[in-house]
Image 1 (cartoon, rainbow, N blue to C red):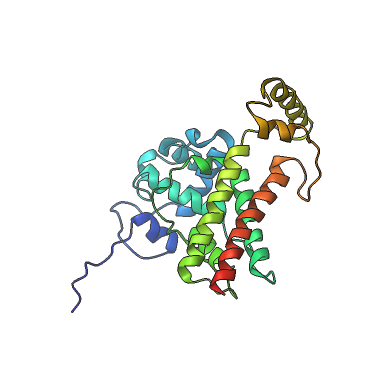
Image 2: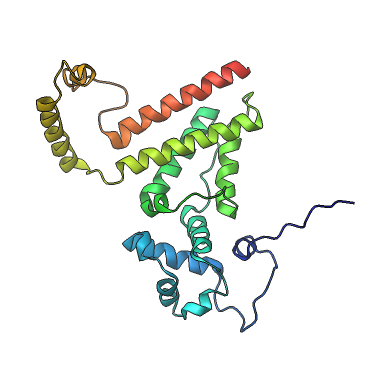
Length: 245
């Protein structure tokens, strides 16, 4: 006989998964949990995470704030719903090898963060448990099918790619684009040339001496540097695959 205590799911997860769970007293729910996610994401996309509150989401839906508490118990629950709605389903993973599959996954993850930059402001306090987020995790783990990586290797590799993508998007979130970015880059280079004394900063000076050295990734951070960084991360995973093999 097992002495384990039965696991109770938070009410927000029961709703996202369509599990019949605890019902609060009162009238029949007037909308679905996905409606809350859609309304909250709309507010966040327009005004950032600071624009999202229980009262504003309720107003967006045309209901009272108290009615929202029939679905979510706290703002943390609201964030769970928002993340699940914002990411949606993961990309199709039909590429012929692990590297192309995880690259497609990383590109899609990056695009999701760029479309909803407020996601990076939500504290990561626990592993994901909502349907779409678990689907993204499953997609990344199965990207390594056909490799000798252990289940723990796959989980660690997925986390490594996840951290890299989040960091890269975080760094570039407020950078300029197109001509404005090029002009800002030129100005930065001129100022750096003035300040970076070769005797004190020889490595920086060496880079300034060859500012237009060609490479296979290009020169802008938003695309070229992201690809370079991701390739370098995947090279590390390839080394682990070679060792496991």
